[in-house]
Length: 347
Image (cartoon, rainbow, N blue to C red; front, side, top):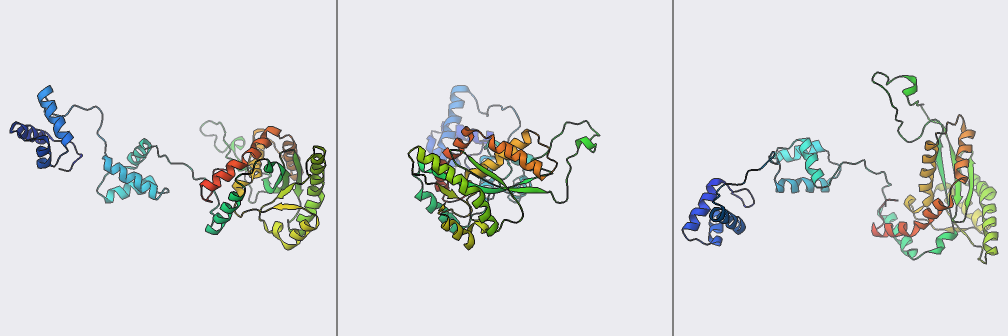
């Protein structure tokens, strides 16, 4: 009988018999291949409590032994996307019978639960190194983040949003018109560009047509340049240097030769940006917050203009506390990337 399993009544009798024959605890343990502790407990129960059987237990005995549970946890850690059914079959191949329900219940006792996988970009080894280099260079930044103009584009759908619609209804009312969530073959929507700093919200612009390098240059000329001039003037009035740094991701229209030349000619200082790093840009979180606010206020836009006007209203109603919170998160974002060794973070 292997160590760790429960002693049978016959084994308990053997232990007591060997003790009466003046064998030591260690000798008995070696003879029966049992732990010294188990031998001591059995002999103490017999001489002190006149007991030779195990205590009665309440409830159904566990299907899986401690060793089986360790194997189960090891399998889940190795392949986190394994289903309960697959785990049950794997145990069966080891002659361990456990239903899917038993698998789930056992994992829950180990504080392991099934959850929806978070969608994050798969970052290449090359880009992980670039992210680490970028974050190492800025790990001691503090007030420097106050002079960054964060920018991005985002798409907002006109006819539907990314959330699930929930309705209260009675049985049999599933297909009533007021309980449906309408869908279309291709949902129409708008593309917007926006930017902000700690000091204030920048412009929110409706992007018309395809955003190529030339259109992007025109967009920046009409919206970014006046915003930078406004920020610089205010900064100099407060005895600052008036210099602000423009952040943009690595979209093709941003990094095209024509776009780079235009920014150089207009003296726009650009913050180098590591590829596959939406978690380092606080405006990405702002877009999600903007979409959430639209849902909460139940905007029902009938066309693109109404949708853009709703977005613009929420954009400029953003509190300074919310923006400060996003900018204040930058040191933590950098630290999170360093700790994850360049892999995706929770941001």
